Amino acid sequence: MRSANAVCCLFLEYTVGDEGLPDVIAALRGHAQLKELRIQGYNFGRACCEALGMLFRTTSHLIALELANNSIDDLGLSILAAAVGLNCHISRIGLANNQNITSVGLRAFGNVFQSDICRLHHLDLSEIRIDDAGLEALATGLVGNKSLH
Image (cartoon, rainbow, N blue to C red; front, side, top):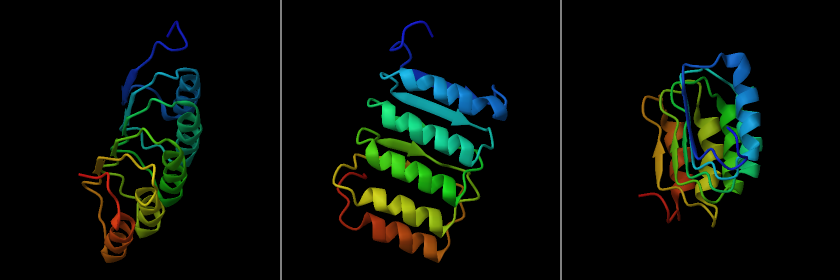
């Protein structure tokens, strides 16, 4: 990572200890050209979601975010949703196998879908147990959405 704009894609899968992950995310704030970020299998929670939220506010080119196989819960998803709502370039988000997400988190994320700046084309919620309340929260958020395919 020599140049502040050199990193465009970063894939971290089971390679950095959970304790060091917020520091890695914080270090990416200076990489304005970051387009794709994949952090899978860390079982991270709120602290990393907060670090990602700060990253989204400073990275204007991020279009793909893959966060499968972590421990994102409702509060973490709410933090991510608020940050994603500010980053109008994100078109693909993967949240597969984050078993701590419930209808509460999905409701917060559903608000992102209703935003006029939402450019989300793909949302992966596979392997998440979504109950009726979660489905209702997603459906409410999707009403009027023009970006998801």
